[in-house]
Image (cartoon, rainbow, N blue to C red):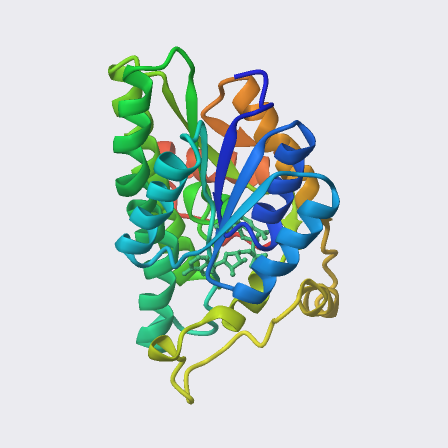
Length: 296
Ligand SMILES: NC(=O)c1ccc[n+]([C@@H]2O[C@H](COP(=O)([O-])OP(=O)(O)OC[C@H]3O[C@@H](n4cnc5c(N)ncnc54)[C@H](O)[C@@H]3O)[C@@H](O)[C@H]2O)c1
């Protein structure tokens, strides 16, 4: 797909960060956007900001952990708004786990898997049947882009096992879905988006703002205490490391280019990460023991 004008793009987690930037980037190209998010206030703010730019925007309060919520979103896109040719399964959270792996709050594991992993599965379940049916009666390609993370898909860091585990699972699902569509020579294209090349300056460190009460962290559970990119910058500087960041608007441009180029791996490497991935791959192939990776 080269031209996004007039297409409807559905974006989960569309109220903030990468999802919000995707909405602006697609809107600037003439697409209509349906942004879905669990955060009502952020959703309303983003809706207004998109309208101020003259972008056609629709919203849906949606919880990706609930299959029915995604089914309702898909019904809105296809039954009310005439169909979607771009779907971004993007909503995600970080649980702020810290310290030894066996001491984490069960709710950190459960919440993070519920949003990051089940959120993707629920989105696939809701949208793929409709995208496939649309493709059968429509000459146009459509695209589902799933936001994963190099943290889990390519590398495992010692300090974020919960997040890494969810994103490793997301990668397996995304890649299998891609292969199924490739075998079927489907007009529905699957893409894996890896925001970067550096840590993307979004609300991800403050994911607790949308953590539901039933997944509250146990009071005595270890927490990283990092709530903003600045907190992480200070921590890294305290041990002499520099934190480089990427603006989410840059990620949105990478994402759109990935669709234009029909690439599965939608990723911008930085040299340090590329080297770490190469080291890990060599460790697997050569059966040498892993070297703990550092963030950044
Ligand atoms: N920021 C980074 O450096 C980075 C790196 C790699 C991958 N990612 C991934 O990018 C995606 C977007 O995150 P971001 O960095 O823009 O963070 P963000 O916090 O700015 O945006 C995430 C959005 O998801 C929404 N959300 C959370 N739980 C939800 C739920 N249950 N249902 C619906 N919406 C929900 C939040 O309200 C928020 O608007 C995530 O999948 C994240 O894992 C981020």
